[in-house]
Amino acid sequence: MNELIFGTGIAHTILLFALVIATGIYLGRFKFKSISIGSTWILFVGILLSHFGFRGDPHILAFMKDFGLILFVFSIGLQVGPGFFHTFRKGGVTLNLLAVTMVVLAVVVTVVLHFVTGEDLRIMTGVMSGAVTNTPGLGAAQQTLSDAMTAEGIAQPQVSAASSSLASAYAVAYPIGVLGVIMLLILFKAVFKVDLEKEKQALDDESASGNNAIRASYEVCNPAIFGMTVGALIKEDGGRFVISRIDKGGEIQTPGPSTLLEEGDRVLVITSQPHEEPVKILFGKEVSIPFSDWISHESSLVARKITITKSSMTGKSLRTLNVRSVYGVTVTRVIRAGVELVAGPNLYLQMGDILLVVGSEENIDKVARLFGNKASRLSHPNLVPIFFGIVLGIIFGSIPIRFPGVPQPVKLGLAGGPLIVAILLGYFGPKLKITTYTTASANMMLREIGISFFLAAVGLGAGENFISSIVNGGYWWILYGALITIIPIVCVCLIARLVFKLNFYQICGLVTGSTTNPPVLAFAQDAYGTDYTSVNYATVYPLSMFMRVLAAQLLILFTL
Image (cartoon, rainbow, N blue to C red; front, side):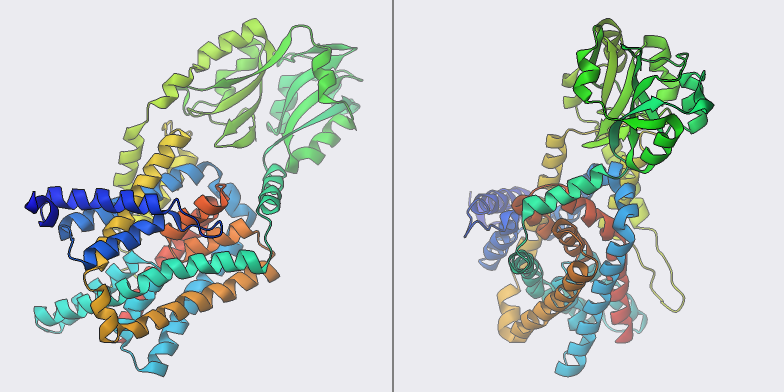
């Protein structure tokens, strides 16, 4: 029993992890004036126990830290993947430019502090990595320093000591990088009197006015389409809309590909906002018909939702399935990851998609059997794409990227690589017939386990030298870290809000992503809700990670 509690073996390390995570999550439930730092408590519980001598096996700590971070960012990537490129087009360039600005400002503040205080630039590089909670940056800086010192023939003990000094500076500044950002977000919300519901509604409205599906009614007044079949019209137009119902002289029908369009016909169309005006011109005239009227006159048509629960449907397009012709049922919209999409013929389906269909009860039942529509099948997770994706992500993150004049290559690391691969899998998976669907609860479980492992490992690893580093002059590192954290964030947040008029949730994602700060992302989601923060976090994270790693390596190279 003594070995279990005070030893250093595997059982002791697992016991410590469980205790730190359980205690941290429990403390995260308590709020001070409606504010809680959530799972970030795990980090500080780990530091406290480690300071008092409860330390785990260093190899296990290193594994759990990296593996936890991979699980966390990979689950985020799968979640935001389906809507990532849409979000990037709508504001990703601006967000990434602001993120790069934040990285550059952090480097500038670090260099200025080096010249003003006389602190070793190597130490300041460790402080900077901790202040922006960038573990890969610390690792890259340590590797660059070790390789350079070894190449110069310096003894290994001196190399190890130099590398450890970077880690100590990182550990001292890391809590400031977490708490400082959380406090700045809370302060920003208070200063600008942010109404969370209003901010969320604004993003909901913006999302609804983008490529999401909208419903409109038109009267066929364009002579160019008189006598044309519905199938020919949709094919000629490129599939920018779906005709859900057609009113021919008071008789409402579900149109098939061979249905003729005649003058005076009225149609209920599903399209997207960018295509609304061209579709109106195509038919000739928009008419105001309440949706209830389309339903009240129907005798045999019903509208239902069908969930795709057959993995064999992944990667198949609506054009290939030809549901309208074969079953006489119209698929009007597809709901994927909470986003409504127009059910165009070239839309590739994936497991977990929800189809909104219109037709007779009998035909809809046939379509339901085609797609599965058995929710119980979705409870079984698809682990092969997840772990195979992690394999690809690790390989991708380990690829060295060389720059002219820089002796050491730059890598995206164990966080950047898996995140990018997960985003690509989430977006392109259906086209490649890869089933990446996971339920919201499964995704959340994966994410929470990952961030808990990461925080516990960082806390247990940093606590040993935390107090001694502060006492031996490291208290100045806290101040330096605070300046490196605060100055860039304040400047960029003011520019983002006052100049670019960014939404609060966009700014939360910008700050957490550009500081590569998973603990603060977890806090923002717990405190403010919605997935908008995660989407914007993922938008800026890859470039920010790359820039942070590159900046840390360059600062070390300048000291040689």
